[in-house]
Image (cartoon, rainbow, N blue to C red; front, side, top):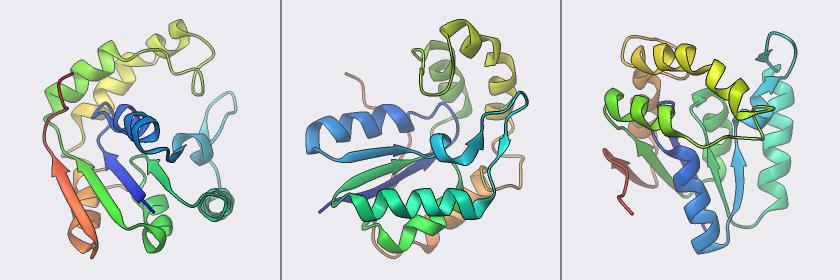
Length: 161
């Protein structure tokens, strides 16, 4: 049974890798964005207890899975159930390029135009990855990786197809 956590900077390829693993290994897939946010006029984080309940429901409902996202606070809740982690630690420029060319994510945005309207903010967010001190930062991701006791790997580039 595979129980994999994938994390890294925005635009690092987490969703793409998770989708590939879902297809190749028949894993259930959870994008943490779908349970981390309240989709209000100005999106804001859900209370952690609500996200935790949804996360644990997913874990308990699926024998094998891949969970992806940049939220160390949520990843830590899933960690006791995981047997593998993958840290996508790509250069910022690669993450920005990926963000500029990503396909429309209908589970996050009503349209490709809405997604693209958010691109400038996203690029700034990606660029600040090594400067921030929050649950989405390089510092938090590196510490999470170092403290995990199971199988783990760091990828510094996306696989070319």
